[in-house]
Length: 297
Image 1 (cartoon, rainbow, N blue to C red):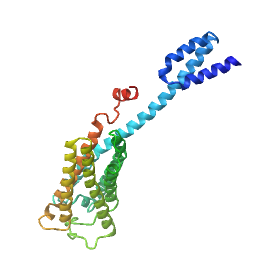
Image 2 (image 1 turned 90 degrees about the vertical axis):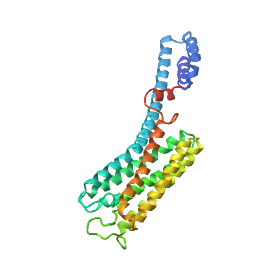
Image 3 (image 1 turned 60 degrees about the vertical axis):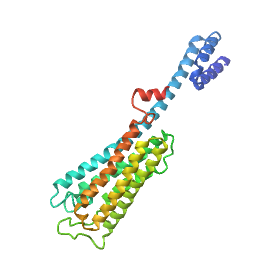
Image 4 (image 1 turned 135 degrees about the vertical axis):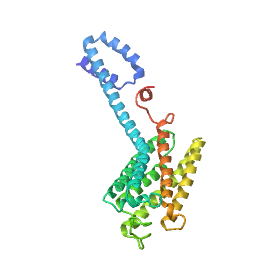
């Protein structure tokens, strides 16, 4: 009975000891072999080490899942913009009666049985942006910064895109053909489309400046300047596009072009931001050797 109790306590001690005490465990094991049956001692030691190994594997698997989810989120930030712009440009080029230089991208939701494509484009881009925003806090913590506002603002941009896909815009600037230049008063869904989109545009503009400040604090001057410049150009472009939508002469004729350039500036910044966080030194844990090295320094 005493020997069994001693072996049980020995097994518990092996299971909860730190790896740095491995040498002491071996010494103790050699001493116990002189008192107890060596075969029984070997079984207890082996079982305890196996339990420790299984615990390590479970912990590593959880870390691996966390890394993969973060990588997927950042990759969503990389692909969302190019995919959105590709679908937008293709539709604008092939839609009958639609002038991509004059007409807004939201107008592609109207005037055709294929309007659902642009709706889906808005929805997909919005979901990808929200997933990207969920991955940003982890990437920011790798820099020792608390992700208070940046990720939230990116999520609001994504929510604005989803709102633009759910609520159709009113006809504007003569599209669909035969409709007035401006719908007055706006319909309920058109009004919601405009207001939700406004929140999204403002959120992305502010996000550029928030990250510019953060990059300046991290000593990354080029990224700070690029983020600030993107925020300025995006804001100016948005103001000009709103003026074009209100049928201001000299702008209404190029309203669609202004919108595409403005949105392109924002999407480019988001894509490069995601790539930056994927590639940053000491940031994302990488698949393969780098990840293993971080797990077992």
